[in-house]
Structures are given as C-alpha cells and as structure tokens.
Figure 1 (tube, rainbow, N blue to C red):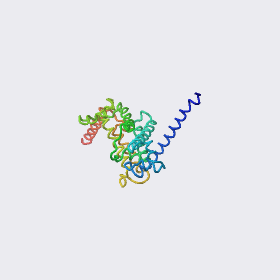
Figure 2 (figure 1 turned 90 degrees about the horizontal axis):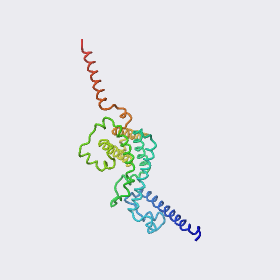
Figure 3 (figure 1 turned 60 degrees about the vertical axis):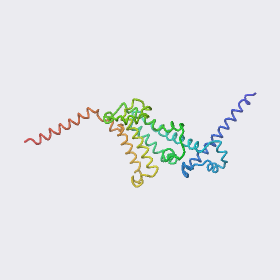
Figure 4 (figure 1 turned 45 degrees about the vertical axis):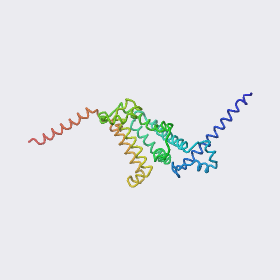
Length: 275
C-alpha cells in the first residue's frame, strides 16, 4: 500500500473527530441558551434536537442522556471559572498575598456576572434527581485550590491575631477532610478562617447574581463594586493578609507597646493632678 493509502484512514478519522467535536459544541451551546430560558431542571435533549434541526436519536449519539449533558455543562462551567481565577491570581506577585486574594475574588464575581446561567447551574438550586459523578470533583476544586495556595504562603507570615487563635477539638475534627488536602503547614485557625472567607465570597456573589441585594446595596454606578471591594478587604483582614494587618508587630511587641502607652498616660495624669 502506498504512503498516501496508509495516511487516508487517519485523515478520515481526523475529519470525523472534527465533525463530532463541532456537533458536540453546537449541542452544548444550545443547552447553555436553554439554561437561561428553561433552567437546569428543564433541559431536554429533544428540545435541543428540535432547535438544531436534528432527530433526537441523532443527538443521543453525541450525548447519551440528560444527566450526561448536565455533567458536561457543569464540568465546563467549573473549568471556565477556575481558569479565570487561576489566570488573574497568577498575574499578581507571589509576595502580595492580599493582591492574590483580591484577584481571586474579582475573578469569581466577574465570571459569575458575565455567566449567570452557568453560575446558577453550579452554585444555584440542585437539579432534582441528578447526582454529580466523580468527574466533577477536580473542576469544582479549582478555585479553592488557588485559595489554599494563598493560605499556605500566608502560614509563614502569620499576624498575632491568627497565630494566637485556637480551634477547639470539635472544630478541628470537622475540618479533617480539608486538613487531609491542606497538609500540616496551614494552622487550624487559618484553615478555618480561609473556609469562612471562601464561603462568604460565594455567598456574597450569589446574593448579587440572584438579586438579593436590591434595596440593600445602592444602585448607583460603583455602589456594588465599592461594597464588594470593602468585603474583600475585610475578608483579607480576617485571614491576616491585609496590608495593614501585615505591618502589625509580633504579639509580645504589640502588648508591650500598649502597656507602654498605658504607663505613659498614667504618669501624665498623675503629673497633671499633682499641685
């Protein structure tokens, strides 16, 4: 057989793979549009097939079931969000912990507001009857993995408030699954504060995406951005990575400074009170 004849099967296979990838992309794009009109629980492969001008059996050759379609959409959404967070955080200098945290927060909010239907799919109401398979776990962990990297770097530069904080035994046991991922380098208190901050981030973003801050946060240009920026700053303080918090003295020095000021004040009062 000639070289051309040997190459022909691979050429045809590549063409078929491109065709399959294109049709699959059209199915997923159509499904994303349906998320906005029907919601995740209303997704229907038959409706998608009708919009594409294809038979249901033809669509089933590319996506075997509604649950497989949901899984593909969920994985793609988590990956897109994760890529956005990873890219923005990677652009910040490693020593700028507060800047890295802010970059992650901004990336999550920006992506959610630009893709509200996909955000609702992964952080909104669970779809009745759908059980996410293990293939969704790694994509879902991308944002938290970036945050865990920030916490790991912060562990070597703890502020007094975090360094002296303790977590009771029950709290430590509750965080055992996260501890197995984080490793021993991140103190219990910082790990707990990090999880609180991450939950607050997604809770705040969800409030905005799902319209829960109308009448609570102003509607003027910049109001929501200002509220979110202040929230991000306060979460950074909670983690002990805010710029002001990073400049605090070690615990002993801070206490010594307070005692010194108290002594000076007492001396001044006594001097003023003396005849």
